[in-house]
Image 1 (cartoon, helix red, strand yellow):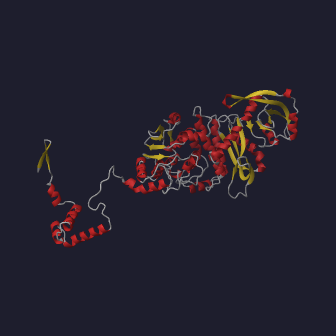
Image 2 (spheres, one colour; image 1 turned 90 degrees about the vertical axis):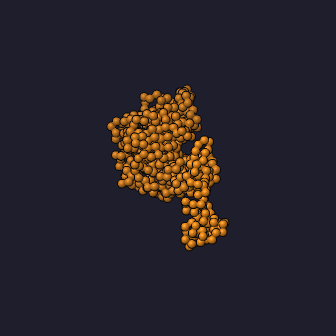
Image 3 (cartoon, helix red, strand yellow; image 1 turned 45 degrees about the horizontal axis):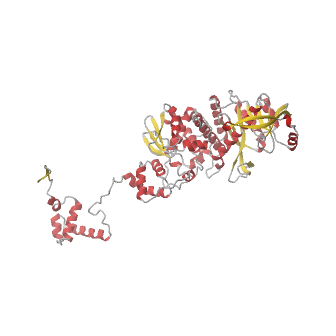
Length: 591
């Protein structure tokens, strides 16, 4: 049959009446048969004969139809309802309920995306957002970093950690900025040091991936390893260690129990030679103690004074050394007891002098760091010490009687192009158990009630340089405070038991990686690890693994241009532990 429309001849494939009289689909055939039976009141035998059913077969169709009507189950009975928009994909349908449950636990769209990516569910953020909106969820309020780190437990079971295959794939990571440290690990040779270290490994996770798993958590400011519901699902953190995802909490605990203090000391010795060869250790070392509290049953521990807590605690006493020029932390040891506390400085000299290229000239430390007898040993080793003398009542009385005409006024440069005026008095003094005399410099006008007394065996350095050298010792105190706050040295006794000396070694490594990164940040070199993390590293993004490149597209951020400029110098560097792939850092097209 033909018909004419706007001058064009169209052909019907069948007559419209034939479509209704001769149904072709099963659903349409049943619909027409039931309509004749119920609406037209045609006998069942006649309807069955007309549509080619047996009588018993048609009565069964009638019975099933009545049952569906009685159960109110008529949706899509004969006609499939159409819905607006794109059809829902099978991927979304399979994780719809999971998205809803994660949202109930205050997971953001990106958090949900990261969790689903770790399980291999490739669902776009737009689709996740549509599911959230469809189920009536409002926007999340702005969250603090601590609340993001303490999300409720995930409904998803994290996959088993294995070596990443480096096949072509893409995923979202909440810690994508952390991957900027990978070129520094390779360029500095730290990856090779880890591989030749004595640290243990397993059949499934090699030595490099094991250590980088700990470093990843240190760099990312993970407060408690036991709260693994977020970081254990992040593919970006896994890629940092060369794994699909980081191992579970139990693995970290098990691994740390296989590490000995000798392994840590040997690894620090490797790092020490590395820093020396790269010219990052000058002629001066600042030394200080820090107290690491233990929150469990500490009957086997000694009481040490904690300035942060303002009282003595059952704790471990650790020593740290710091280069004031480069900011590199060179040495750490938690096995310090009261009986050998004064000998720690000599142990460090043995550690340092094990390298023939050593250029150590000055040791700067507090008055309670060692005794006068050990100062004599340091002097015999031709090492210059700069420290503070303890102020007894007789010494203070004698200082108060020094005539005003014998004091010298000097100006010491400080931070921010400022100067500070001090009054100094210089003399020589004899110390108990010390052979010869020391140079003694008394300082007032520094804001303290009692004068400060610097003693040293350095007689050639000028007054202002000597005072400034000791003043820079406060940098190690600042560094120790940073270790406690950012790297969470006071949380080592959480529910995940990590040996303190190993945790301190990993903290030192992570801290030095931040220093290496900071050295390339023009005008930002002085920032602490906490500030560098917040301004530059803490950023999410998309990671694309290709045949030759790993492309990291970081979310738009105020300081992102500085990161892109810094990482540009590594664009041609192939990283062996990433299957010789190059890392390219770009800005994402979204914020």
